[in-house]
Each structure stands twice: as C-alpha cells, then as structure tokens.
Image (cartoon, rainbow, N blue to C red; front, side, top):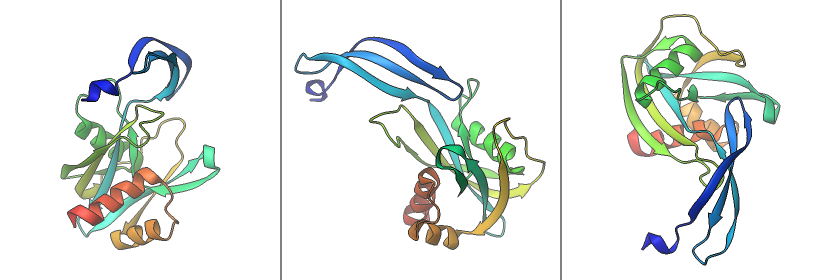
Length: 181
C-alpha cells in the first residue's frame, strides 16, 4: 500500500556542508512519474535528557542560541557522534559534558522526528534518575551553557505559558507529564 506514495531516489549530492549539518540535494521521481529535485537538512540523531536529581528537581541548562538571538532554557541535549552505537551512551555523555551531572539510571522515553518534511533529524528522549553533580562541564568550543535546577511542575507551567520555547525540550517535558507521571 505504501508503494503508491513512495518516491524513487535517482541520485544525491551534498549541496552545502558545514559543521553540524549538510544540505542534501536529491534527484527524485514521484509516484506519478514526475522528476524533480528535493533538498533537505541532513543532521542525523540526537539525544535529549530529562534529568532528575534524587530530590526530584530537574537539571536544566540555559544556553545562547544565535539563530533566535536569546538565551534558551531547556534540557541537556546533543548530537550522537560517530562512535555512538547506543543513544543511551550518548545521553550519558551529553548530560555529563553539558552539566557536570551523572545519573544512576537512564530510561528511554520517546523517539521522534521533529521535522521530517525537511530534515532527517531524529530525537531520542531519555529520563535520567539519581543525577548528581560529579565534575565540571566539558563544553564544545561553540557552547555557552549555565546549569540550574527547576521544579518539574514549574517546567510544565513554562511550556504552558510559552516561556520555555525550545520545542525539543517542551516535547520531552510534555511527554513525561502526559504519559509517565
């Protein structure tokens, strides 16, 4: 049944490459036989961590985001790297690097494709429990991050009132509030 909707990829090239993502241009044939081009952002897989301390607070980050020209409040997150076979390992690394916290346990929460009409991005969400500050941050050269903690209910409220605008963080918070609490 899906075959009647499937596009055929005739060829592909990298139209633009930069640190963090590439723009891929594909020659495609649509189900009706029409041929054309389709461009998309190739980014790959990332992890987003909802980290709870032993007393139930959530470890959050505040980070400058150049495209929107403001400080963004949200959850620790990052791109899976070439050696990452398991998103859980990447989640533990990103939590440690961005916050200096480590967790007793990680549980998979949800996997989603945030914008599959124009990117191959995949988000793997994890809940981390028993988080404790164990080290200093180990930030990438292009990261400016401040670490804080917040009450989970206040994070839900900040999604509701629109003050937490990072949608990848909002999805993790809302998913947990809706299905896991």
